[in-house]
Length: 365
Image 1: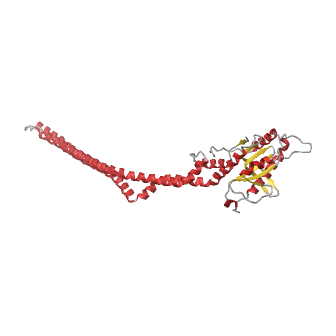
Image 2 (image 1 turned 30 degrees about the vertical axis):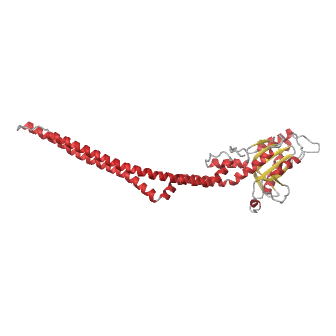
Image 3 (image 1 turned 180 degrees about the vertical axis):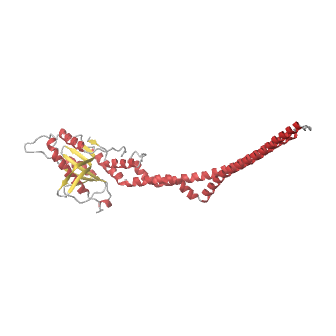
């Protein structure tokens, strides 16, 4: 089986976007696609759940208001009964005071005892009034709050549901927006994985580097195109006994293929080929390839664009357009010119100079 390095690029792009927005509940591309298909149903479910919550809140408020009114009445009644009993007790104390004789000291003592009892009576009245007042204030405030809430959700039910569900819906909408933004990467990943699955059928003489990225400290100048190449990215870089294959995958619809505003994938591959050719031309003497008495050996670099569903009918210079079913036979058509060790050396060099990026944990079937 073909030796494979790296996760496919579209999966890494998806993972980066999800990580940047702290979205971590998806473990596969299928889950992302299912989320896109069911997000409207999820929105409806959120609204339904909060509708049920508001309905339940109304029932609870009715019950709480009724219980609160009963509790207020009960508490006031208990205080009133306690107040009456306390006053009766103090009245009996006055009645039970002994009748003083005409002497000065007993009269003063009687006045003092009467004063104490009457002060208790006045204090009891004030205390009773304050308790009733504070209980009424606190209870009415609490009761008013619950009544206001009940009146609001009764007369503005839809608005209450919208307010209650807004935070959850906002989070969902942000997630929908982010995942829709990576929609091309999602379907690109499906296409790239199909290519990888086909290439895995090759023998272990073939080495596949997915998501090959290489940045250049000094840009490579393409005089013909007047282009300074600062970096290249290749969906699949296949190092084989017959040379190197630059493979770009396009999971495009027929409408997208016919869109004249899209950047040309043919130009993209040719640009990448030029940069890769320059890199290998500078390095070929250091690769310890088997010498030939005619001169330095060439490492062929072939350009392939694989279309998963729809394929253009046109053919292009220096770039082969293939369908997925044509890919394997086209690669195996070329005769080997490098040994296993030479193929390994070329692959090791390319892997060494490539930029390393975080690999995705997402699964794709």
